Image 1: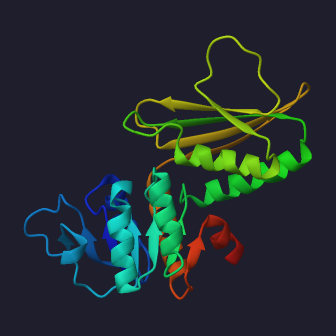
Image 2 (image 1 turned 120 degrees about the vertical axis):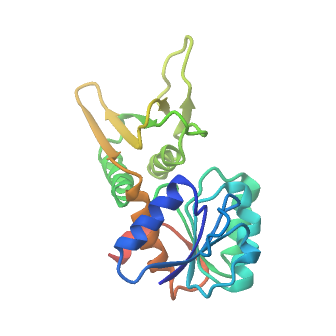
Image 3 (image 1 turned 30 degrees about the horizontal axis):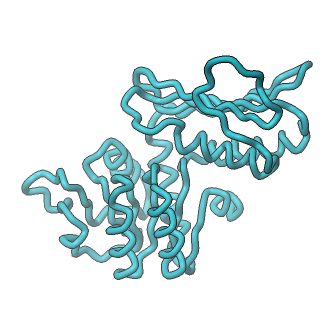
Length: 247
């Protein structure tokens, strides 16, 4: 599997490079990063400079490059793994439109454990029909978006079971909790890689479903699995549920 990696010099870019070195049949043939060092033959500063033959693109750059990345992927007829979060509504619409022409893998979190957690949340809420739900996420102090994309994806999972669910972020002041409320709380400190908890509670008991990432390598490994999954697929928008269902 020959890979074009955007965001090559970033934290996650380095993780993907290390993961690819450990993975059989995975090779990064072109890195793309505006901070590419002079003299690095494998990394260029723009997609237009990338001349290598590749099977798939993995993106860990920035959501503002979504339009450019989609245009290049469509031109090359190349599958695309979008591992960058924080897309605007306009960018999400562009992704949906591009998926009519090429296979695109889009997930808020590339950890297989988070995919399992999401599935467990839906199964638990189907049983705890009247329970209250809260979501707590923890990340390092450099993370820009809050709530995290993964916390919002977990809320979407709750909403699949409870269409009336309403996200409440930054709860403060006076006011009784409403039955449809789902509190989403963000913690930012230190070097926390990522912790997500979904707390399901009744008057008599509570159930906490929790996932903790110990290193960013888990997301790199997942992005490589997603890339391998996409090769040979037809146009469409794929996610971690599709990957899990494939087994």
